[in-house]
Length: 71
Image 1 (cartoon, helix red, strand yellow):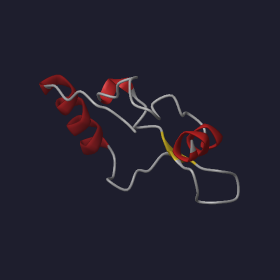
Image 2: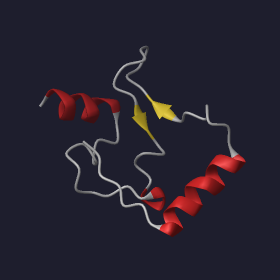
Image 3: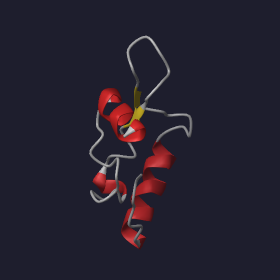
């Protein structure tokens, strides 16, 4: 579904993010009124190593994620 490239620089950025935020800092966009088909802002952020070649990497909305997972 998702592919990441973790380099020393991206791991350092992730560690800096974690140091400044709680591990429970889930920034998710979910299907309205539910806790389904949630899309993570962090997972889609190329600054943290996300690549664009995963099957669901372009699923930036709950609807797109549902289509990707069900498709």
